[in-house]
Length: 625
Image (cartoon, rainbow, N blue to C red; front, top):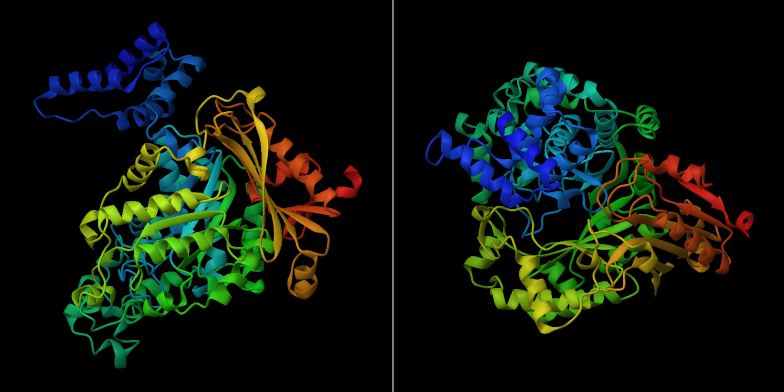
């Protein structure tokens, strides 16, 4: 491996850059020397090897004669999947432990080894199961992987998935988030702490994942229920088969697999914390090496209340993912999704006034839907006042074993859309997506082998965008326009503002765009309506005449904190957006401006004049006038 590194460094010294073609030819040559069809050497192994050499074998590393400037070029050349941090932030997704769900939608996967709606073959789920669903271990393993791929990890967005967050006990919620922050705060000590934590789980009798767990130890404590199970029914695979056959519900299986198992229960006793302990980790993270610049938590619209949102803010949450799926009451009912349209509207209103970014899930091809109904439903969702999410997962329904949708497929009352129908719906939806909405993805991370029928193409989004480009039409959706890692000429940028109205606020989407309409950075400003605040004042964390910045984001390769990166970050664009938002709010008669800052950005906002104020940071607009 060192010989290959020497060749790469020599080429970098000579030409100043290398491309993937050079790497492929070099690796192929060395693999052939080891024997036919040998794949010992790979690009993904080069950077981890270099970093380990630098860390653990200084003598051999010094033989490479790598200057700081040359190291920057080397890491850039060896970086794997550079788009992962092209948005300016490194993302870490974690999964909560399996838990009983208070909903039972007919399309929702019922993998008993996972929280409801997730499958054990999904990458983040595999990582979670290997790590006993421990948030600390999940973060440390993901940090290691990101570092090995050459990605900076100064700024982290944490995404917490696992079905309905509010279904979990409050003590577990607080503990889970506290451990995420602790893993980022522990720095070099995290790896050693991880080893101790793994020994703890092993000492409690847990293997790697629910598939290795039996519940025989529960018999003594729960004789009436546990003794009814045969020995063969005490494994996850057998319980899964019972669920798939309709002989057991997901909740019943999860109860038997986890609640009746002494090992899992002995661990659960330890998985409790309080806000005082969490606040300590928050304070440390404000100046930590790995700072949390975004915390996303997933839940359902019907769990959104002023109390639940207040707790989410105490946890440090800045964005909420909610599964809407459809606005058609008939389709919601057919799919056993017991959420009213009024509750969805209320959730959107509260989320906006509380300052959260709203990341909604919307599903096509549900039972009872048609392509034309889907188009109408989506257009209403992204353009009508009560809704208009900030971000979307827009994906088609797929048939997965163990779901009640299988019965509807069997009796032919539901069928998957053809590829042409699906591309037509998605193309229409994308063209109808306003410029202030980001469609983050079009497929779930469900492996093709888990999908019985439905779309299995991982490049679905590319097919949709190619279709639109060939038609000569233009997309306004954010992700399509992101500048990512391209160079930025500040002098050519224009500040464009999209204004739109919701039932609770007047919204302003401020964006820096290039002459080609590429988006370099943006800010979401909410101006709560006086009447709405007055009617709900006793339940809200804000007062009259208080505006809210819900999001500030500047694109470009993730620049290390306090250094200029290759993209648009750290060039003052964010500050100018905040100044423009302050002017708009002041002109609208607002006296104060709040920002829903994440823990890792508190220091930044303090430096530009914001002061800590309860759930937010705040600046007086009167002082600036």
